[in-house]
Image (spheres, rainbow, N blue to C red):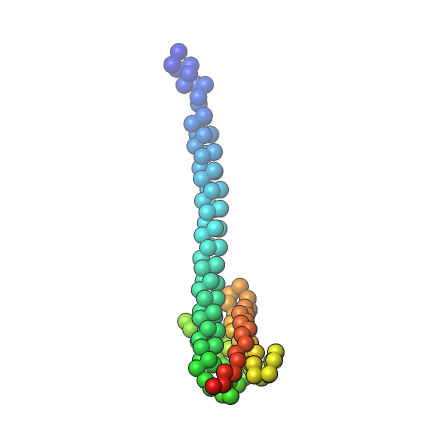
Length: 128
């Protein structure tokens, strides 16, 4: 009887093994794609964080100046392998007299394409 049971199972273990290997290969490929996407997004988030920090530093540098010395300017900063272009536009008496609207745009190019981060603030002239 045991030999009869073995004959009925011929190839059954092989088929089950092939199905299990196939399922493992499909799930490993899906997880591999998720890991690649995660690494790309992590790099993109790192460059965006650097851009935000550069914009904050630019605004702090402007805030440290006298109100009359706040002027439009541009420049570049290289951090790691990425070059960030900084464009600061100062518009006096906007939106009201004794106010300056300041727009700072940080642009850079990464493997996913060009990116831009823009901040908009208003500074006032406080006289005593």
